[in-house]
Length: 298
Image (cartoon, rainbow, N blue to C red; front, side, top):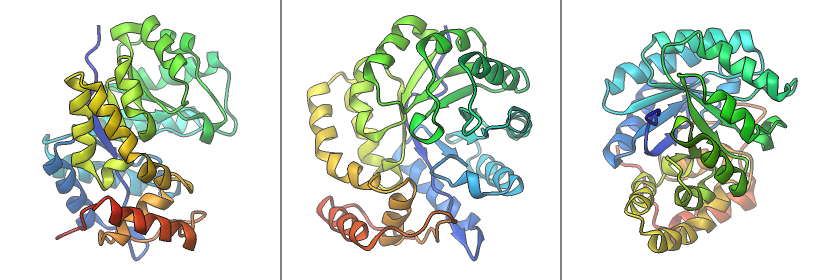
């Protein structure tokens, strides 16, 4: 039996940029906001953090800075995956040595691989590091979907702790939990499925929404922990229009737009991502007002 890396809310943190470089002062402010809201963990250098357009040096600097600044006050996960096993292994090894609590490693994309290749990929990385690994399954981005049997095989490795599951298939998630039990934990990778996944035995969520509504996202998970799924379901439904708008365009375009509208000043997106469309921005701005999403106060 493995203890989950975290339970509850882990925020998939945006990376703030200023004048083309990482804004570390703003990063610290974002971390303080997350910690004060009571989230269990943060992921830096994930998809929402635009890791794919950051250099290795930038990513490692953000990881090291986050670990040092938070100083054990919150769990820190680092995104270190790519479509090259050797590169993923090296980034994971260095990030692990920097003191992160876990690694979030996406499945290989574009070249993809077989299910056997996935097991080989993750086992090679897990053998190289000293901290737990959370697999990230997001078929809409990678064109590759992991199976329940692959999860069962991966669960045999002591350092492979579970999956951030963004496949959208609740039946598959139930089968995974049935097969793997406490040897492989499941976190929702979709904000629109937090309550459904918790109701079948999920361990929490790795959330985009919690960048702007961390306290509300924490409350949602607390309701699930209390098994008050009626209230939790009502809250999930109440939040759905905002969640839908945050994924109306490719993540992290809408969340960064929302944060800038709220005064967070997290900077521009890195190309090929462009600003949110005028229509999308207008809809998002209206929803932020309707939901009374707090503005940033330094």
